[in-house]
Image (tube, rainbow, N blue to C red; front, side, top):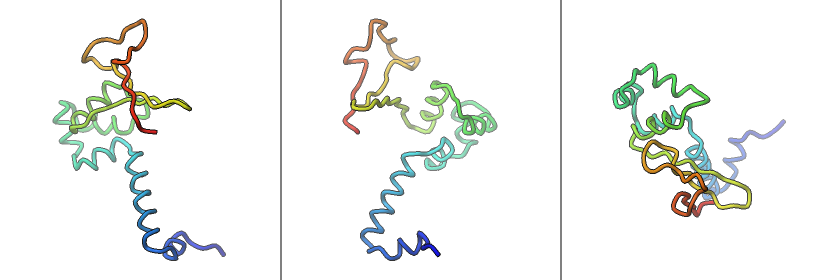
Length: 124
């Protein structure tokens, strides 16, 4: 018979258990649903709906959608006091933050992005 995860974890030294727990929490925080983000911000659907000028039902529907407009997602995040950044990652390239996809600010230059239009980040 196999050994349970709990038994394996209990057999590890406390420092290693703490590192595993911290990494688990980091990964869970990195991949959240809209509902989980809202709950982490300790905000109800009703309160978020009030800020957005929408109904609670509309907020519930937004949280269940697999496909959402960037403008809708941006307003949802900003209503909670956050900022939405769209990051593009390619193999063997530094990640880039796309700009010019909102109703705010100048439209992107059709001749291609300049260094001021594409902000590079230092994350892997």
